[in-house]
Image (cartoon, rainbow, N blue to C red):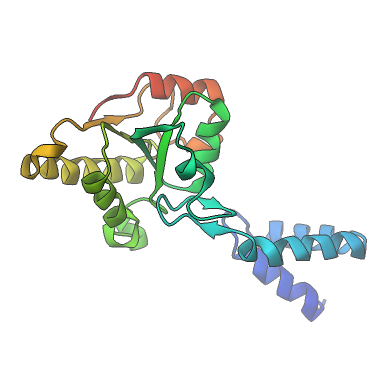
Length: 206
């Protein structure tokens, strides 16, 4: 059976999304095909406006409607605490719990040599600049508890540790790692609020 070009184009586009294989892409395509045109138009408009109506925060690299983002602009938050996460989705997970009231820094991923992702591909340079220039008392390393996340946390701890030796004004910065509550191999975005809260409560010196 020859698949119509319009159908095939959408299948190929959906296959490029993370976690979507050929079969799932086909099912999603035909599910969308059965939707009324009005719903498809709304879906297409939402995709079109995704980049147009959002900004990447110039300070923390979160996604918001403005830059700096609403979290960075909120002076009621603890300005001396920065929570380092891999993706904006991780911020949503932490914020949902309501137990953390500091600032964030989104790396844009984790160090992964197998995927050709090194420190230079992440927002690590910008994080180090924030550590140097902002009055930080605690740096919370909340990367995912898997191999890549642990390697990234270790890298950041080593770099900041060397800076603390070189710059006397940074010596009081506490570097912590989220602790109990998150199983090895888990992702922050899939954890529930209570599990994340326990992980933050149990963070340890890193």
